[in-house]
Image (cartoon, rainbow, N blue to C red; front, side, top):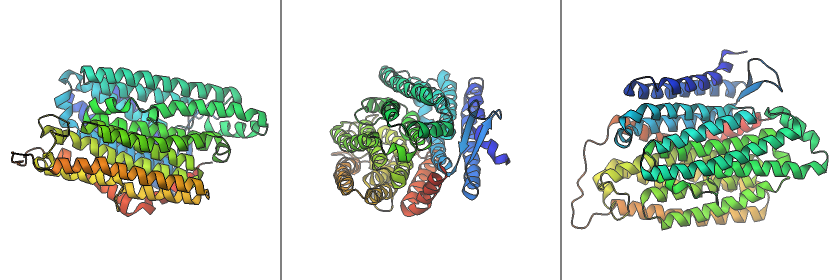
Amino acid sequence: MSAVWNLPLFMIVPSLFCGALCLLLPKKAAYGAVVTLLSVLTVFDLIVLRYTAENNSFTYSMGEFPAPWGNEIRAGVLECVVLFIFLVVILCSVIAGYRYLQMHIEESKHNLFCSLLSLSTAAVVSLVFTNDIFTGYVFLEILTLASCGLLVVKQTGKTTLAGVRYMVLNLFGSGLFLLGVVMLYGFSGHLLMVPLRETISVLTLDPQTLPSLVFAIGVLTIGLAIKSGLFPFHSWMPDTYGWATPTTASLMSSVVSKAYIFLLIKVYWRVIGIDLFEQMPIGQILFFLGIAGAIIGSVYAIKATDLNRMVAYSSAAQIGYIFMSLGIGGTAGYAAAIFHLIGHSLTKSLLFLVTPRLQEVSGGSLRFKDLMGSAQRDRVSGFLFLFASLSMVGFPALAGFSSKLLITEAAFDSGNTATLILVVLTLAVSTVLNALYFIRTVLRIYARTPGKKDRPVRGMHTPGYLIPAFVLVGLNLFLGLLPTITSGLIWQGFSMLP
């Protein structure tokens, strides 16, 4: 066994210990511990990515207990690519959001905030690497509770209300996921993914067992759809993202919701098997809900009256794209879903890190009328918002364009003319709607304020803001200009999944 096989476990355990350690350290030391942890985890992930790309995926049995008693971690190219983006987004969000951590959170709560960040990171890493659906449920709950804590630690009436709403809906989703896990265990007597799939493939030889299996997977899917914000379960998103701190909003919209989707993809591929899953009606339902989310989320974004709510509603539309791709099916559909997932993570985090800068030079307001001229007052943030907006719309050479192209190719490869027509129409309509609200916003922030001279505000652009922001820009350009490299790794990752 290579020493690299231990790294996934060494990414989870130190994250949990760091969560406890942050409560004991001085404020700045706790923040430094989180940044150091994330940096080390990113390096570890790249090492595992290189190993799996050159060799193959591997499974690490904790405690060396074999199935069905042991707990397992599985690492492959797909897991490492997704986790790399997640870790980079968390790291950039923590560094770039430090200014607002000091402004929005009481000094006595800084250690708690850092502790919750570490626990969230541990849960995300575990959800990506887990090979056990019950362990997935455990860390899913940890991630839900830690995310809620990151939201309410701001301690305002709005964040408390948003936190309660988020908690109620997400715990309901967790309960449905657990119910699905219990039903699958009742069918098979297994919790590890590979034994589960082997047993299910035998059970489904009897056609009478298929409806019960469809119900179990349907319940599990609804639970994760609620937690990820698929239409019509997206109502918690605007308040949650709109009232959180920039770091929390970036983390929850770009990583937390995507981690739930990635866990769902692993269940479809490794527990059910893609061939069996495509015999179920669940994929078709996700396809149409994804279409509805892409359109209706954009309509709500157009009607939003402030910038944060507009960006939050656009997340519902982008989540719709991901589920629409899953509904297309096949390796091409799932690869397009993963590509859009990581591209949206990079772009959305940049938007949530930029908007508070525009707010700060606009008298603390996020209302569109007050944001006029903000890009003139903060030209760097104005450019970053323009860049992210173009990517969300799907401007060529940016990540958003490449992902929409891959979704279209997946629809074409499906061989279903009706699917291709629906996908093309959805992408066309939603792109026009995206352009309406993003370009309208860009025009507003660049417009001159009547009767005022919009002079640039100086002293806001520290390396702690600029470096993370342009790292996100660089990765976005990489996905947009060289999409075949990332898509090739994604395809290689899917080929490793049994």
